[in-house]
Length: 345
Length: 268
Image (cartoon, rainbow over all chains, first blue to last red; front, top):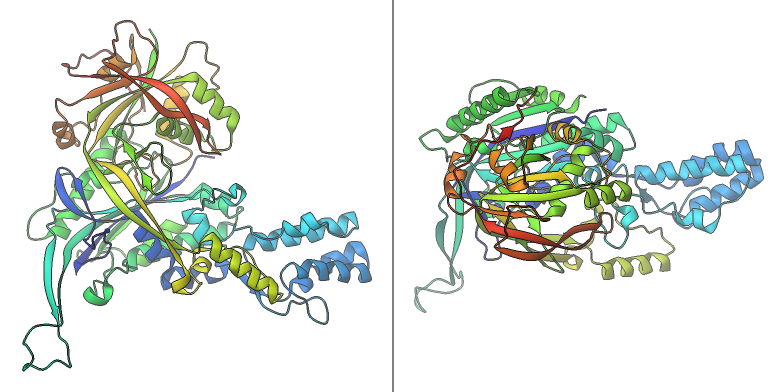
């Protein structure tokens, strides 16, 4: 089956801010098309999105489940193969993997948090034991923990543990560093802080002086999701794929990075977004902004440049992907239609 | 004449990893063999742990590249927050003492659920190339037992199985690869005779690199005399274990009025 690549392009205008800074505290930048641009790194964007309420609200239970009832979960299946007495003994053994068990032997004393894959593993081990009419081995019990699958953030953004390769997950989602569509010069904010208990008779100086750098920009963002790999990371759970894509889209369009937000409050939403779906080789539309956008209306000129480049590329290469977009200034489209498009196969 | 599979690599950022131990993650100025084979493998749907397929790709495919524009270096200061191994082991001991359940944090949210002061920050300094452009050529070495024809490889690059990227997943391409099969006496001539529809779009980048092009290739070719030969550690030994070994790369400066060679017309 050919891979479906879901691509999301969006432009977000940020008022003066320092969303993502380097080791000197300066906003990150990059050269692009020969001129300096403001940059928000891929890693900064991903952290802001995956720790956001927008992401958690849609996916809370798919970041794992929390229960005490491990024995009760597997008892019915065990009883079918093992007889009542041995079944409840084995159920208790399985429950014990997740914590000390209480009176009945079927519930743990405390809630334990397990990933959807760990739950699946527990159920399939119970089925196997019932069929083979036996108790679990030490090895089988140990194998129940530590599976990350079904956790939406890991399925999207991947995980690499050099020491424990079997827990590695290949990221299904690719996030580019966001770049301003226009030239940017960093500005200095010279600031003073007053010492409230120091009177003017002592001296009139400030308690602290410093500078912080900032910039404002319209940022171009690009995200590409391999829908097939996302589905594979979820063990084929299509409903979860759909919900994860909605949650990611929601976070992309509404959540700003957290850097220095208490000083700048540059909370912005995407003003233009374009989603594309298809099997052709994915490409960002950053090349639309190689020539920096200039003029009085950066956002409108940016949208025009993006659409023009996309049309040119589609004309040369054919194989155009299906698409859906919204444009806040033009009053076209809605977020909800875009998320529907993004998340359906 | 041998056939070469030529394509173009451009994006705002690219990173061609070199030997990196610890917090410094350098990038070479031009693509590594392992990264470009990785793009092809991704397109063909070869997974990191498929050592047979990786073995035949590594043994069977030759690699050359031309740096059209070397671009600029960017050093990105990168921080990642999370619980260190020490904290995890202490947490596990603590849980065992209370007879409470324990497992490694399965999600980012769980990783960050530790008290903020206990979390570690991992620092790294990662290099990227900005405003750079490369054309690459791949070919089947003589006697290679490759399960894919060169046309199949070209088609896979047009409709890849996994997403291609410029060395790091956060470095997407911003133009199509435009894979094409070119017949030429050697890889350098093949690259010179490939034609790309994105020339106009990338005019600024191409102009920025004018006069500074270099070509890199491997193997001996009649008529190709290297100005220098370097050893690069970018041959894939094991993709899943992230192990690489050395090879020889020939290099020379390049400037020529492009000659249009035997460019096979594009289809579909």
